[in-house]
Image 1: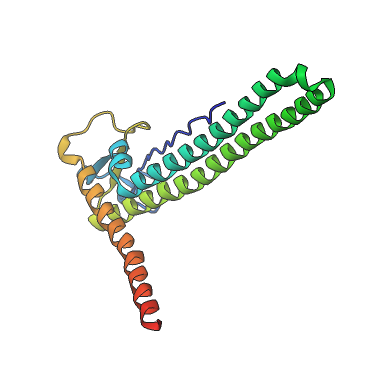
Image 2: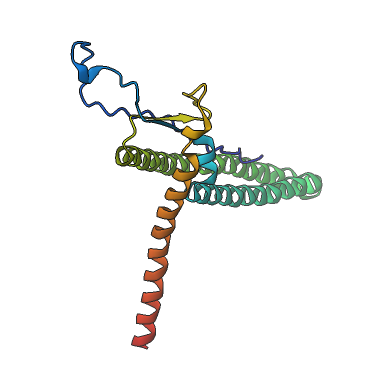
Length: 206
């Protein structure tokens, strides 16, 4: 019995348009597609791999998966030893003992199966919530970046590719990764500084 591996998959497909009006009337010059539209694209697969918060997310859930797996394997080994004990001692300890022991082991087996299912449900549900939050945060960052830099379109490549060809000069993946990691790093520093401040306060009280 093994805890099934939970694969974390998050693909970004983004396209931001500067026009607020969706009317397609060609007589309105504001609705005409600009020939000099500012365009860029992001390798979303690389972004997910190199963004520090995304890496922390994967590390966290990989560790959780391993803890659950180890606990279930430990329970199963103990269960298997008890099954073997039943097989060895069934004749010497009598039919009544064997039947009671078998019923107990059957209940334990059902409990173990339920435990595995509960772990998987908890693992998948919590992971999905955090993953969706992470993807939303990344999309919001890119949307803000695109507006500030004056882009008409920012496309996403990767698993959900929306760009079949583009010149390397339009690739802003490195810049996005750098800026997002810097922003995430600053947020991570705040809790650390708060923890140090609390430690100093406790020492002063002592």
